[in-house]
Length: 386
Length: 175
Ligand SMILES: [Zn+2]
Image (cartoon, rainbow over all chains, first blue to last red; front, side):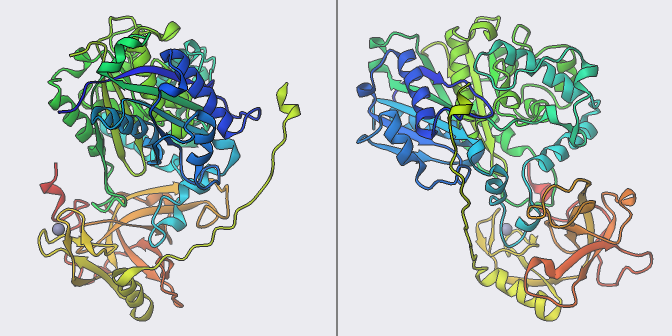
């Protein structure tokens, strides 16, 4: 029987395009310190560490060795996790598993990215199979352009929907002091002036390259009462992997997302996700992906997400708050991005999110990460110990 | 403020790599190079035909040792047109160019490649295409130069597959 597990501290850096004032270790130390402060813990209270970031991006081998040296992990047990876009959420899952299984009592998960130090595009290119498709692959934009077109065609969503999503996320990011891109967008006409990357995808539809780090501290039930902060309970988590090469005929598919959420919801008695879950922090690298994936996760019927978006349904102070932090489209230090989803969800459930705190009494939070060729991690957090 | 005070160190990594094809892909590329044939593998259990070929069926986790030769004709499942050149290294050629995923007749899966000899405005999902092979072939995926639209009346007798863009077997049993 797994032990009850709680998140008792979160910390993140201020995310920016470049952080020339710190090296990688120093950047990670900022998140670790903020996290310990939030949990009211000393570094000696942490038994083990889970560290991670993207492979290849900063051009350094054995990155965790340098992280460990700066975040207080020296001499302690731990592991490095690097699962592409899902890295941050997998870090959290490994920490949950360490604690739930009883291997360690208190674990810190910490992810970072410092994208200005390397070649993100070259790193991403190596994801593809060298025999068949590496010669023609270039990165994420093509995929998300195709995804946007598909969503428009399948649901009849008009082209301005991407910009409408961005306006919501920009409003959320303005309220989140940690967010990277803090755009002032006055109206939809102004939003629609953003240049195309690949139509219908505009520059404002796609996530930025950010630098930053995020950390959480996870502990077991027995250790919780000694700690100052209100704990956020880890209810469940799930990971789904998907084929690498579109071998089933090149069709656009979101079955990995659906599989992850439906497993999680079924196991936890969630039949009306939009009512039972108070807040979603979903890892969507583009505005259009956010709409489609809300449907894929089962929060809306097919074709319903953009109609609810038009009504403003997903704002932080409205019916179903989605990405009140501003989401991945505003902030994307990749190795930390999935962990930020979990951390932001925890802040919401604690009631500590500040100006982007959701309006309703939070009960359950849903956080995801996505990466590679469709890997999905989904985490369910609870404000109550059940 | 602080940016003026900090420095960077510049560097460039040289990371050569050489990936072994393995027996299965070796057979495919040898047949393509030496005889201009397109060989696929078939799963004995679910009967799916894989192009590109692979040794293990991801659905059944079965080893595949059956080979089938496919015709050069197929159906365009999806495509995109790239209008923007930004990198000689990352892009296969100067823009504009078109990429597509083609399901060869008899296959259940798609092969990603360039589309050539085509008016981009006339590209359609479901259109019939054929592989154009290079004269001098080296044993890699670019031995196929590109896929071009199949000309009217040139449907060969061995491309017996339907014109439907839907895969024959397989997909229907998913979901
Ligand atoms: Zn099979």
